[in-house]
Image 1 (spheres, rainbow, N blue to C red):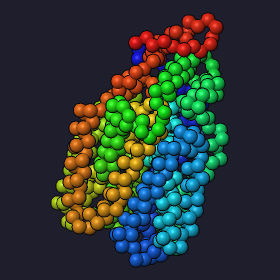
Image 2 (spheres, rainbow, N blue to C red):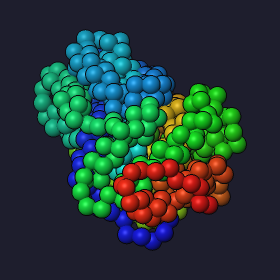
Image 3 (cartoon, rainbow, N blue to C red):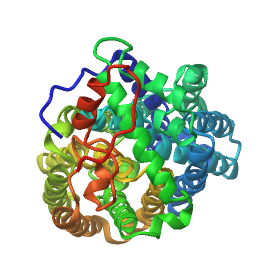
Image 4 (cartoon, rainbow, N blue to C red):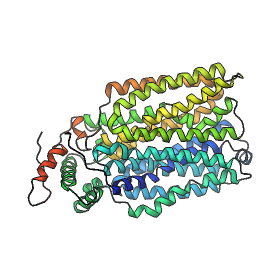
Length: 493
């Protein structure tokens, strides 16, 4: 793209992106709440005996439900639309929260976790797509990254709710945190009808007039209208061409070399996100603190502080991701996580069972640093990168495949991590040292950069035929239309 001045992002676009991201709180809260809940005394007494295998099942079944939720969203986001799919996810999340809070035995609690995972799978797949499709190209990283930011905020809120409830007595100590999961679902359901449909989905449904109105509204309805008219024209013409070439079925994910590359990159970025080890630390951090000699309220207090550092670091990522770019941020983050994990492993091995409180303090500090480093890179970018490298025809289904790879790896780690920590202790960290280094190398050599380009222009990076000019060229042509009508743009490559 040229260096022309970009129009400001309207308050309406920010409002839509922020409200959609409220649904992202569900993932953060549902993921974080289990970490502190399984450490509460009243919870352990109520569900005793609670061996590592049951602990792993409680955490990992959430991921199993998420797999089915992602598959459902892969169909629903195309057939029913992004907006309706988010609404369905909120309804299911509300039901899941009620079941978990009312659980009278471990089977009921696990069932609620599975249903909650289904809802989170829907949100985790659909919200990044929706936000990427309403965002202007020069701020797509920031607006798409709101999903990860709100996941982090939800995780932090869950940790602090857990800390506060550790001072409570009786079943309230664990039932209230589980009921807290219902809050974002209720907010989404109250405001979902205010949210517009994705303009690209409307164009896919050939509802051009509605799409034009949404794009105009997203740009503020005032000022120079050539930019949103150009954006509409570029979207419409490229989508029409893609629709004539592909039928948007599952087989189209692998029908062309460019699509196969997209799916490979999407799966890799999601896989390396989980292989970083971040969720192992997120879910089992309370066990890590106990292993370092922390006891009582200090365990949940540390979890609360840990939950804050990620969202704070993620704000920095959102501010600069459209400047830094995706590729550079990912591979540098991978190297930094490799070094940090090596320090955690070394300190845990040398001082984990000692009386050296200073060394244990540094170990906890590097655990916190790991969350900071992860949040500066992978946390937002894996949600940004996947939908933007996909064409409209395969965006929902391609995103679902990649998210499922993320979830399956997460399930595996959630199930085996309690056993691994019990059997090999700190040596378990060596796995993540290797995987983070591998991720950095792979990203450096094969990932293309996508910052600053429209979703339609990114197709050119993958060698696809693009029948529209770049956005600045389209804007120039639209500006010269004396009658003010949106026109078809010829290929000016």
